[in-house]
Image 1 (spheres, rainbow, N blue to C red):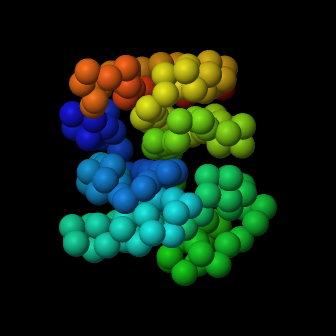
Image 2: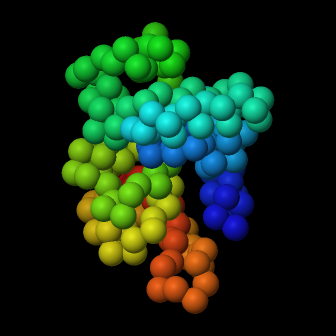
Length: 178
């Protein structure tokens, strides 16, 4: 259900590019790729990056590049304050020559939510699709982004019945006057 919801809320953006932080094994990456021109996916875990790259190859998804970077490192690369060999190795050029039109940010962060730098990055995107396993950190991050974005969609997913755990999804759309 989460994959279907995320796919539905990202339709209609085939002319722009997706940035995904915390891509894990590429589960959302593969599902969302048809909705975008290109996808830049990052993950810190080396084994997860290998799984994501294998997932991309096994599914024949040509518009996805996966790099081993932390969210914080991607923030630095996106602002072009720092270059990373791992981005170059993955075939990702974040400079003007790369031609990325990153308008949508997809995040599925750990329970701690987004760090301050990642929230700052999110504030610059046209839309943010946020999947969270921790409603408290999600609320904190949505509150922080409320200065630049409005909540457009909300969903809850009971992935673990008979437990107190709840997955949440939120789509944030940039305010017209930002």
